[in-house]
Amino acid sequence: MKEGIIVESVFKKYGDINALNDINIKLEYGTIYGILGRNGAGKSTLINIISNRIFSDKGRVSLNGISVRENDLALQDIYVMSEQKYYPPKMKVKDLIYWTKKFYPSFDLEYSKEISSLFDLNWNKTVESLSTGYSSILKIVITLSINVPFVFLDEPVLGLDINHRDLFYKSLMKRFKDCKNTFVISTHLIEELSDIIEKVILIKQGKVLIDESKDTLLERARKVTGSKEIIANYIKNEDIIATENSGDIYKAYLLTNTDYSDIKDITIEKLGLQELFLKLTN
Ligand SMILES: Nc1ncnc2c1ncn2[C@@H]1O[C@H](COP(=O)(O)OP(=O)(O)OP(=O)(O)O)[C@@H](O)[C@H]1O
Image (cartoon, rainbow, N blue to C red; front, side, top):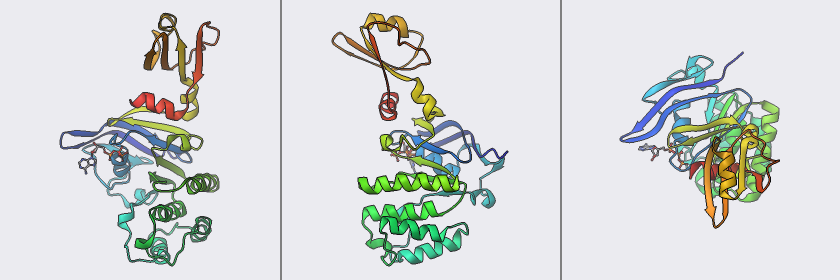
């Protein structure tokens, strides 16, 4: 079986900043990942190292056992959504699509037409004349049309209104169902992505804090509210993420497998991905 992308003991420093500090993760085929983290956590640096755009100081990234470093064969299976600035500003959208198809033989022209019409992307416009939202839509059209096994999207919905974001999430899910490519999405709009992602990789200050299926993670995430004495008694051996005290009310945020439902005088609530993220990264 193909093992996918393996990131082993990757370190990256910028001067005194430890952008990545011993990263070890595995990206499997046919999965949707959410790479989450606050600004400056190291998400883009990680994506750039995986796709060989920049080099790590230490460590190794491999695809099916073969290092991706300066390895065109391995890199053919990885695509990272480009930044707008890499597209020639005077070029028409249709020419950009034409050239992209030349560079990436797996580019699905039929699909690109289909998704362009869904988003009303005008192929006769020049890259520089597109609004912020349509610049993102152009990147989305190209990225979803490039049919390779590992597709990385760094903040894909930047500048998109809610209708277009919704259309993007639906298009992504459909594309995933049809092609089963792995999508690795980095975003700050966690709640919107929550239903889509299957696995969560949470990076905090250059380290992986969470690397787990979303369902098992949310199954363990709990907010326990009650008096401090009662809660403290029960949670002392738990993985406590955060606590809050307001008057007599004490709240503890936990990652736990314990069922507290039969304990009187405390309330237990599940946490959404966004709330959990806030508590883990504050
Ligand atoms: N070219 C660079 N030169 C110097 N420092 C850099 C460079 N690129 C990134 N950094 C630093 O490395 C750290 C990680 O940055 P990175 O862009 O990977 O974070 P991020 O999680 O993608 O952030 P954001 O969500 O804001 O895009 C930050 O402290 C950033 O300032």
